[in-house]
Length: 247
Length: 321
Ligand SMILES: Cc1cc2nc3c(=O)[nH]c(=O)nc-3n(C[C@H](O)[C@H](O)[C@H](O)COP(=O)(O)OP(=O)(O)OC[C@H]3O[C@@H](n4cnc5c(N)ncnc54)[C@H](O)[C@@H]3O)c2cc1C
Ligand SMILES: Nc1ncnc2c1ncn2[C@@H]1O[C@H](COP(=O)(O)O)[C@@H](O)[C@H]1O
Image (cartoon, rainbow over all chains, first blue to last red; front, side, top):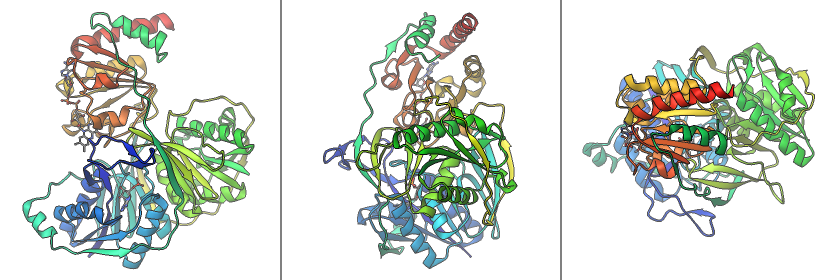
């Protein structure tokens, strides 16, 4: 009964060495392993699947990107999504991506649109809120808990120094943070089934970019660590006060 | 024209991040010759404080329904204010509230948004903002291509310049759209210092062996007026609450001083703390990767070093007060 859409993005593996190419204008993908953005996979997708298992329904994963994203989409299907859609479009601007997702979702009326709290590469925390505005739907960001009772939802979200409990009803948009669910590892059956589940590719919707990355830089290298003897911790206190001016 | 900020509040007071956003906006306004204006929503006191950071006008949207956080309504109020004040740039803090409201506003105004800014915009022939990417492992220069620009500023990233002006406080009325969102309850752990706003953070990992050993970590934090944090496995096994988990998949923090005690320094942990100005690592293993990211290191047993540090900081505090 519930139509659930989970938006997943592709991200470099968390252990990747970050470097840039083309005169520091492009992320160097050479030798980089790509994964599903952890927040999307561990929290948004798994919670979507749990809700479906409890209440029935259908989980669609949606990705905006090129054909090189298909392996991570197949992984989401292996974890348990029913079907997948890839909007064949570039992804270098959050508002552009949000317009793609909103245009598709408007045509397909979902009850629940689940996102990750942010992508671990560009750390935007942008797309979900933008889609909410474009679709004029309620939005709960940084949610750590989602309970559904029919069409009514009770959600906990992180706020500065605490938790806020929110009530809304479908359709709505949520970005998922830690606490929402426990990561799942796909099993052999899931991996086999994923091969035959539908992955539909739809063409990009008309939109323009609102931002453009001009260049990348690396942070300055840390000067080497100054060691203090464990028997002489007063020296650390004095260094933090006089040299680092941190206390 | 004007530079607009959204100044968020907590428990009826403006947040530290709100003043940072104000400071950012007024530095930018000085550069561009514009006026810096703040929007405040709900029941908040001490609005004149914004003048200290260069805000010359505060629009106070006091609708009672804004006492609860609803990003859709707040974005609506800010959009109205931006129209009225002819704002070209709108500034947020990149915190819980900014992350919720800024994207709404960006889509509403069809404006390019740069989140996590760490420097003032470069306005020579364009509008480019430097932001943190890849969880702090790199920076990107992002050009904003739209007429209205929205920026959210990473906490603790911009040096504060006091810039005393008198803030004119205006009651600003906006009729808000009805939304399907209700805040039922707010559970605050109000006694604790908020981790993202803390100047000093004392963090510990699996090297502490068990939750019963956190007493000394809390005491060290207490002596320093610091917040406490932990590595992911420590939160996962339930030794510490989840909201203390820092790193790539937890909170990203940038305190002035970060103590890493019994934490190995895995790349995913560093990703959330490498923006700290000064890092102190304490670890029994001289080869622990954290020493490569640290400014100061003690190779030693936390159970020996931390109690000694508590004493030393206590003496220091007594002598310097
Ligand atoms: C996708 C992904 C995301 C992740 N995200 C995060 C994240 O957000 N945050 C995070 O923290 N981790 C994250 N991790 C986990 C990360 O890789 C490490 O496993 C984790 O940070 C290790 O925690 P630790 O340093 O507390 O424990 P350990 O690696 O077990 O290190 C314990 C350290 O304590 C030292 N020690 C032992 N006894 C003492 C003593 N008596 N005194 C002093 N030192 C002592 C040891 O020498 C060792 O260096 C992530 C992993 C993955 C795969
Ligand atoms: N290219 C994409 N395709 C599908 N969903 C995306 C894409 N980029 C971002 N998202 C979703 O939006 C969330 C926030 O992304 P961001 O605003 O880039 O931090 C992610 O966690 C995903 O759920």
